[in-house]
Image 1 (cartoon, one colour):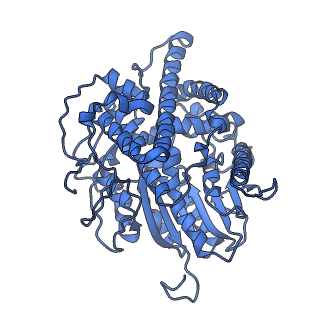
Image 2 (cartoon, rainbow, N blue to C red; image 1 turned 90 degrees about the vertical axis):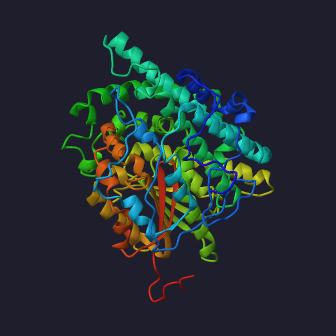
Image 3 (tube, rainbow, N blue to C red; image 1 turned 60 degrees about the horizontal axis):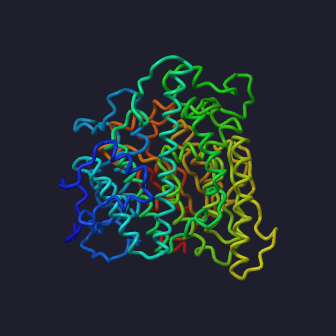
Length: 543
């Protein structure tokens, strides 16, 4: 660690003592958390630490530190994830560390020697690795982050306030969903539950405040990439975006509370009928594979209803306290960098595999040339319909932005995304059709054999010299102190998650001729990028 910088692993003392209730109150009021933190406690620590003795500037770091390929990877990772924070409905929710005698694979660690690792990979290993902080320390560090954003001027503060408020909103959703479930069980079903506290899954204030801190750190790392020019400021931050309207806020909260009551009830019972959906019947169309016919997360109807698609974005962001978008944006740097590499060979053709509701698709499209031909695949017609609507709204907003800035973009100048219903393991496209392929949060919900097939298909349709980005949950070895707890996420009806955590992800792509390139970690998400070599060109000369 550099002189005068906070050691994120060292025990610290504080004069500020918070009860669990007041710690959570501070977290819920994240948008104005700085006003609750005495200035004497606001240290000027940074969220990212450069390695190899590099010095810091006073701004948030946006550059990347790489490790040499073949260099030995270091062993320790720590802290708590949203997945593991929701890992148990029992009263004994607690953090657990991997046993020293655990011989299970650690692919997240072992793969590091294959990639050029962003400094965030090391950061999330070191974060609170000597033990998790109490609530007051987590809250104090959130205040420090707010102070650092304040030093970045109006633009940085605007980003912080919007995203801090975002976490506050989703925290309120979580509280309301939990309260709604408890009331429903007592008043309608006339029974008590194992969830007895105000917080979901009986979380204590230390866990809850740490999740807020992970969100705040994710925002800081996200903004560092924006400041460095790696990708654009999130388009949904612009004024008058529909997600900020009171009608939308109330509607989505109502949908989430209704969904939470059902989800927590099914989670508590855990019976087969709670996992089945309407396409579980063997007579349903063969388009839907067996592994797909389950209610992932115990959400209503799995992926197969409009109701599910309408609430999905709010549900998942509530689980992550608003940081899901920031984590998914780790996918963007390799894609944006590829734009320059294919200059003169436009329009660029991009494929997104398992696009879901298409929200992430809008962030990708917003960072690409407007003439990009974007294709998105998903198996759910309901989620594709949501993706079509999200794409339409983004195109409208982007046209307005371009024209405000002196452009002349007509209604048809930004082509709609091409949305295709198809199995991800059987892509209906010709070989070498796309300059870039991206896949987010699919692999942990697929059996290993399907991951292998999807990898082969994505490699097949990728052009020579093209870039492929896989973004998904961290695995064993990415943050070893969480390794033992990761398996508990399977209790949320994630039947393939344990196997995913032990799978060799780069191997799937290397077996199909791709080469590992970069790795980024942000909280509980990691992004791996690969390239497809150009035939007949010596290694290193593909440019």
